[in-house]
Amino acid sequence: MRRILLIEDDRGINEANQTALELEGYDVCTARTMKAGISLCEEFRPYLILLDIILPDANALDYGTELKKRYRVNILYLSGLNTKEDVIRGLRAGGDDYMTKPYMVEELLLRVASLLRRKDQPVIREDFNTSRLTWHTAAKQIRMDGEELLLQPKEYAVLEYLQRSKTRYVSTEELAERIWLTEEDPAITQSIRNTIHTLRQKLEGSGCGITMRRGEGYRFTEE
Image (tube, rainbow, N blue to C red):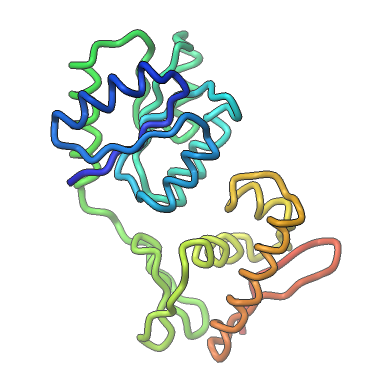
């Protein structure tokens, strides 16, 4: 069953959309804030997100691109912002489609079906090697000498982000914003440190590692 996440602060719109989608056979979960929506992305792993732009705790355009990259999910923005410039901004911010409010439920269902068909298209794998590691980015998987490294989603996200940024040091503030999708605070900083510590252990013998420079952050290294 296809999983769809609705992130919309208007309870009436949320309930109406949820009912219509469930009648079509979709598995639907809802959230009314960006923070709650991000948490559900981790647990629910949706195929598609219907995302309101103006939320109580965030402007969704600031999060769309990172959500799409991290969860390999399609995004349909639903918004009362209806100028051509608004639509362009949405499509540039990770949106696969953009609908302006008010809209007909029938049109919403057609666009959802179209986006999910697009999701079914074969993914072109972007595989590459670093030292003894083989990266399968489409599957979010890394192998060392043919054996899969058992990584949690956050661990993989951090490691891939550091590898993509390997020419520089990445600060904890940047990791908090890009991977945890929140501002840095003591709890997030400790979570980042714990993740880096675990990754270093898992990378032992791989020819790759993570170095730290005080005041600058972390950097991916390879032999």
